[in-house]
Amino acid sequence: MNIFIKNSGGEPIYEQIYAQIKLAIISGELKTDELLPSIRNLAKDLRVSVITTKRAYEELERDGYIYTSPGKGCFVSKQNIQLRREESLQKIEEHLRLAHEIARTSGISRDELLEIFELMGEE
Image (cartoon, rainbow, N blue to C red; front, side, top):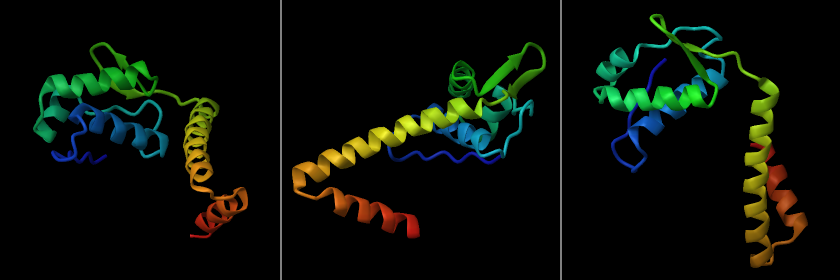
């Protein structure tokens, strides 16, 4: 697993770590019960504060992506695929709601929106 930190853009480092580990878990790159790097080792490798990596791990654990075994480390949790699917559907609905509002206020018809969506699917 490779984590890349961007110092530009304004996104906090712990959020970048969180997002990249989460993506690795969801994509299957990291498997259930796989050991993650220790907080200290990850901080050292990324050249960031231990507090920063600890916060990312705490948030991953809070959101159910990892679990901690005292004295052993942090591991990837078993993922509830149905729950993750529902979360994705909610995000898609939010984005489509925004797209619909922009289209409505710009005079773009439903058919034009559907055509755009179909063209995106062909790419």
